[in-house]
Length: 189
Image 1: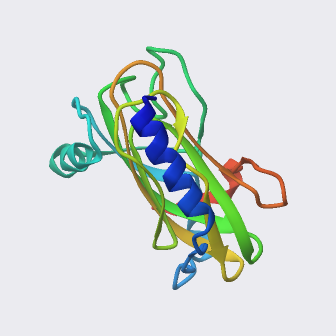
Image 2: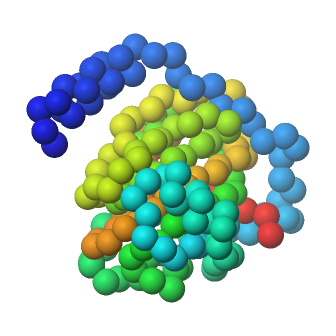
Image 3: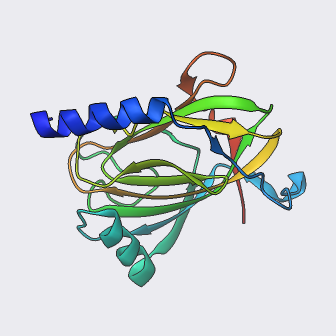
């Protein structure tokens, strides 16, 4: 990270520390338990992209449904390892959708690590945005306000250009920051 980027990041994180928590909106209607399938739904597009806008365009033009992913628990892998449930390890764009369950109301912190770009919305709020090619790095801790226990819509766009890949999400539900368990994610077919 160069000096200019470090200065911007420091300013952003100092400003974010004083920002109000993002108020999440509960999914309405709540999905019926019988309709939920573990994990998150995904679509993949296979072409070289360098930005989220390019990834969204690739998914719109040629995205194909893939086998659901277990959650957001894909730690840094090795160069050449397949990406999630994709057919390739690189030059992959992913549209992710489903729900995340919070078992109690409260104010929590969430953070993601990605390699490469990621835009993540939960309950109608953007909680992660990192639009560039980079190593496995955090997008920055965001504080969210959860008004009540239940399922919250989750939508994300992610891309992996080349090399190793990661996509994880942490939260401090229960008082300690840790990876969101796969059981907290579900989707409807």
